[in-house]
Image (cartoon, rainbow, N blue to C red; front, side, top):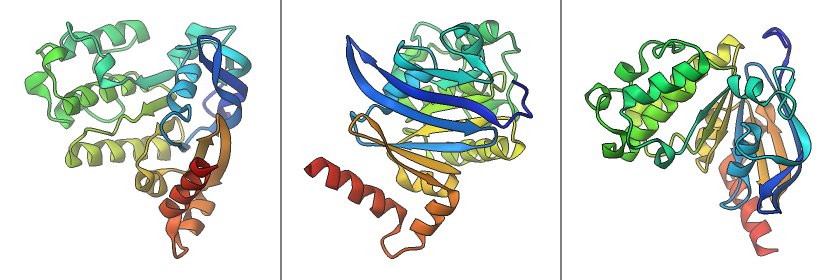
Length: 249
């Protein structure tokens, strides 16, 4: 699929999980180029499981995933080359330095270890002093800066953040959000952001979906998010109300 085609990601009737148990069931949605999708849901709703399935880290039980026209089951390595995944900071290889980690990623993706969409991320996020130290000595915030830098390396079409803005200081958070907004405006890339920060979703995302009871329960486009924000209770309170109601059932 060329970048000029509208659809980047197709998730079709996907069920996935662990040890024979489906954590997510019958989820379907699409993402076009230039979209920022907010993925919402309570703890245990299956957000991380779904993202791991999309990125090929765990197998599908049913359904299919297509990225840039390539089916994940038929061409897993091709699909993975289109995805930049900001891994959990605790999952980074602690025995490597930040420089070695980015060099490893660049060798896998076939790009320069400084091939970023907006300047040098190491300098931009102010962690040059840690760059040649082992990751095991990093704070959570520095780990997330490195993880996000790795996800953006090579400018992949689909960028996945799984709670990746957590732990960042306000300046780094602001810088990264602005970089991502520029990517979305270019219409060459799209972002999935899984987060509990509902206010971030309502400000930056072009769409939002809510996982609940193991499946996709609600979906909003940008107009619907804006309409909800304009009401007396707002978008955030609406989401909290849905989650509280479902937790009582």
